[in-house]
Image (tube, rainbow, N blue to C red; front, side, top):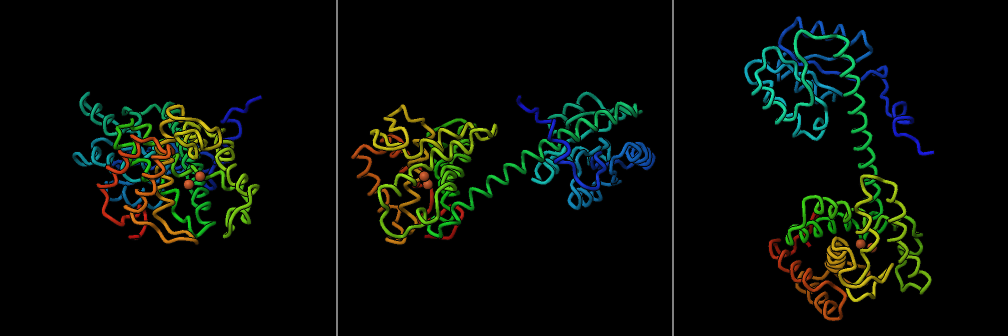
Length: 345
Ligand SMILES: [Fe+2]
Ligand SMILES: [Fe+2]
């Protein structure tokens, strides 16, 4: 039986010190309202903090990120409105649900607030029971978001450890991600496909986690068996990501990034346009980064040298010819010697 996410979710991600309720920040310049909300919510098991001014609120927000913010729309002039973009632009608080407390808000006020990213409204005077029920829902939502962000952060950290196992490939995944996105943008793929190229680039070699150090880091020539083992990494990568709902759309990139346009690649030996477009993009990015960074047996190639090598490979039929030309053109927007995320080559 498939477990419902909620079944095992809440206890695990409950934070210590919140008594299961959640952390609420009340931002209101009306002392009476703050007192009332604090009293009501504390009684219901929430951990409540409050702030009277925007400045105070900023301090509280950054010191202790809340699960839900209750914000007075009319906090000294337009300060209530101004607080929202601030919350949404800070990575620590961008997913925190914001409930706007509205006294005499006009329809326009509300529409502006929704456009700015307010999650919900609460009209004064409050119905205590309704308030608590809504906040409970929002805390749950916030915890899901936290869990998602944590899982994503773990995977990204994991991807970085793969590059870190081999000093010669440090930062490789990040750069492949950068080049793949660059090429994707150049040929006008959708924003969603750009996102997939970003993650696909970060995770394309994640299957190397399953390869032994003695093979992965072997300085000399690989035996045919060892080479076969290395070639398993796209399959291992696909298997690692297949149950992750947020990343499974990037699997074609991970699984097919060693295919070649003429069908001489692996794991499937796919040919031409039957290789998924995003994988064809990533493979060009992957090879370019491998050539332009140093290896135990050779120094890093310049952009020109790398493109010459790839041009010869393109003639052999390895790379999608149009994509290769687009990539070469897109690279011209970068300064010579530029290495994404690192020092100059
Ligand atoms: Fe690879
Ligand atoms: Fe790679």
